Image (tube, rainbow, N blue to C red; front, top):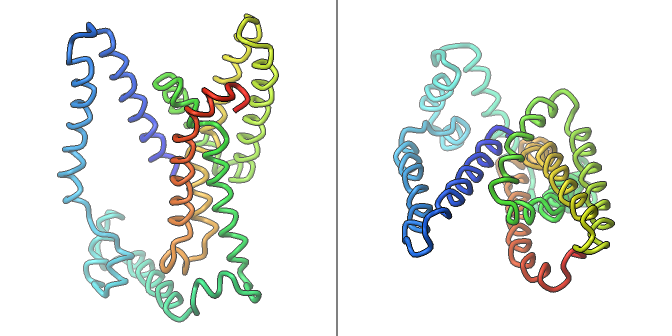
Length: 272
């Protein structure tokens, strides 16, 4: 889960560096804004045509009873043959998970029931709250203000999460990342309270912004999506995907942050 987010971050950084490069053109040159709009068109063409070459999900194929295709596609993923015992075992596991889903009672009713033995409501709440705080911690406004610089730093620091998340565990990575960001925000509140006329406080503020941006991707650039997928039981990954709902919540608050940040910065400044 961390790797796709790293490449996504790299893509945003390259886009912003491209925009920055074309700012050196004269202001009356239309290429100043046309070129940055045109450059993303070419990678989009690659996505458009390559998607037709992607094999279908074996899980979905089993769900719609296209078992032979599921065997073939899973074998292609694993680099082996459809008759391999490993492939048979994995397909059997998929079939069992789908059967368990079909036999389970109403997911919505079970989720909010008092007899919730699997603590589904608790798990669901964890996913929602985690994605909420991922957006509200301040990482996105910094990326908007610092653009290419911030996104490049995020991309480089995200490799720390790539190596740490399995070695230290999900909670440890979240705690390290979250605590460090909290300290940076407290420091920013103090340094910004001195006003922009204080040179030393301004320098300290800039440093803490960059330090914050280093710790943000360690826990909250991809780890939050991974955690939301892992805490969901198998039946909710099929019937009502808990990770999908939490991701929708993530982008909802992303929209809120993008809409309120410019107004808040103009109105209350550093206090936001």
